[in-house]
Length: 49
Image (cartoon, rainbow, N blue to C red; front, side, top):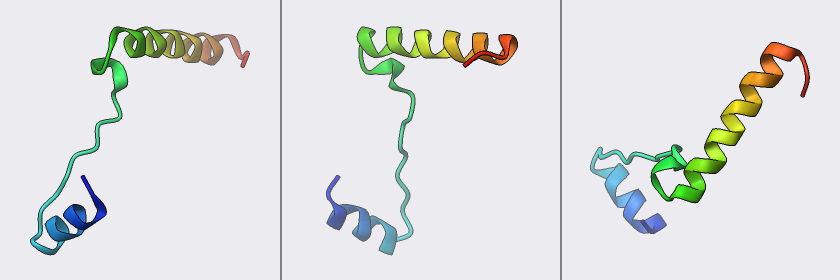
């Protein structure tokens, strides 16, 4: 959407949704997300970053 479209929607009380879940975009994105999630879980439990 362009800035103008977003502003027009806001003036009419509308809303938009921004999807931060990249897993649905492609297999490559899903694989990268799985690796990041695993790394985050591992570092949380092990105390390592």
